[in-house]
Picture (cartoon, rainbow, N blue to C red):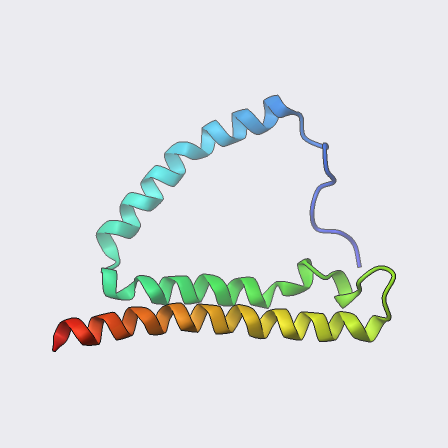
Length: 106
């Protein structure tokens, strides 16, 4: 499997600065659009969607689930533990929003 990320120090600081400056208006429009089109009640769902996209690509963090210097099977175990931990945190956050909403409704 080949790496999908560019190596460290491949892009010069000036290139990064230009690209970051080019992204500022894109971020501004995106944030404005999200705030106007998605209600506050739907925001947690947006976060869950982003988290699930991240989890689907979790092998990017542990390429082929390998951890250098450790047995291959351990990469799978570490990946499973991290995946469960991330999902637990996401659902705890969502649960706290839902709990607050239920308490406000009473």
